[in-house]
Amino acid sequence: MLDVEAQEPPKGKWSTPPFDPRFPNQNQTRNCYQNFLDYHRCLKIRTRRGKSTQPCEYYYRVYHSLCPTSWVSRQRGRRARRGEGSAEAEPASRSLPFCFPGGELE
Amino acid sequence: MAHPVQLSLQDATSPVMEELITFHDHAFMAMSLISFLVLYALLSTLTTKLTNTSITDAQEMETIWTILPAIILILIALPSLRILYLTDEVNDPSFTIKSIGHQWYWTYEYTDYGGLIFNSYMLPPLFLNPGDLRLLEVDNRVVLPIEAPVRMMITSQDVLHSWTIPTLGLKTDAVPGRLNQTVFTATRPGVYYGQCSEICGANHSFMPIVAELIPLKIFEMGPVLTL
Image (cartoon, rainbow over all chains, first blue to last red; front, side, top):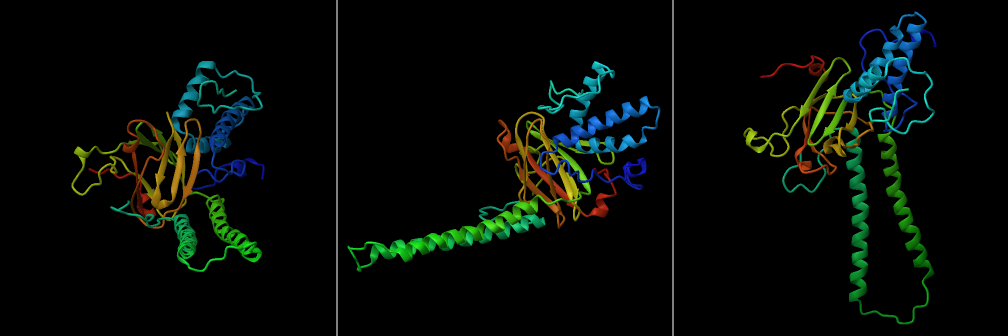
């Protein structure tokens, strides 16, 4: 259940992000943001440990399907300008979605 | 699309819209019956020659006309709540499309399999072909499959808009900074129209939505270059 095999996308074509019970309602902003965060955290942790980052592709596909591209490119630019060496800890609550100025990734 | 002097709802293209139409008919009938009853009672009271100037109380009638409206309201509320929860059911979409509102056009992003992104502007009246619908046609329609649950993620890049297709029973606000989800399943192919439903500036009336619903097999063939 928790192994890498179970968390990889199913063999065969990727269709679309499945229903996520953590975000059952109409507002999916957090769903998009959470998968974006999870993808980058997964990349960072797995590269630091020298493991393959293939399991992180699931999060990539989810946020790529859900998030408007303009939100993602703006955040990528912000990350590039700030550098990748930020602390892992994230503030407990975040009132603004990350696409807005002031909504930081970490 | 609506036809001239249309008073009714448009024909349904999704199961949810069928439910909404049925509920509308049910509530409309309840409202009509009550209205005619009240009108009849009013006219009778005004035209009768029977009068009684010493009425003190009428407990039985007062009880009835308190309990009966409560029952009628419950009979309206129960189907309404049923549909409300029906629209919120957990479903497993087959496809996700993003719709981003701008002033004054829509951008559609198909990013499940690749990176198809395009804008959808209204066709100005001078650019219409014979037979086209004024203020409803667009240059690029959003093409969707039928008989598969489609998830629409709707947001806005600037001000509030609202993405609407009445025949599918869809109306979802496009809020800047927020990603709203709506899911629908279309039952028949065709071209269906809607208009922006949240005031968004000078050209609010001129940013329509056109959904071209095609069979799944043809949709899976992918974008086909058309001349």
